[in-house]
Image 1 (tube, rainbow, N blue to C red):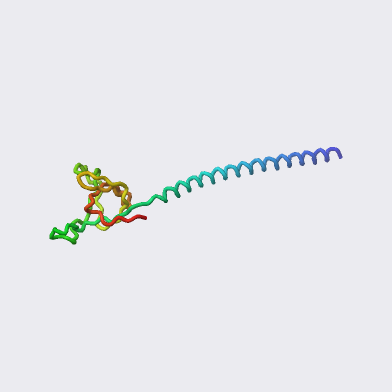
Image 2: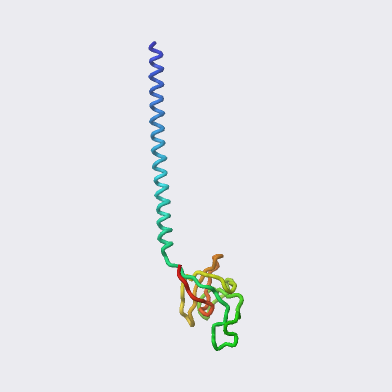
Length: 139
């Protein structure tokens, strides 16, 4: 009889140990999930802050805007150059963007004339003269 009681006590003790181990592991998983959720919430908060920044857009246009030009209102430039730098020392052409392409305005620079640093949907960035900028909109 005493051997049966001893085995029973051992089983209860082992069962209780397993129960405690499961509780500890469960607690660690909850803490880990809370830390991950905190990181996700921090990331979502930073995205929310960034999305509140007003973005400005324009359509690049190769249509002649000078009313004194005989080509006024006509398409005179089919592709618009985006340059490395603003101003008369523009450097190299970074990319050629087709007429009537929507771009985001990142920055303005007044040198010999106004230039805008823009980025297109393919993440091409460069400087463009104000003569190729149409109405600027905000979103």
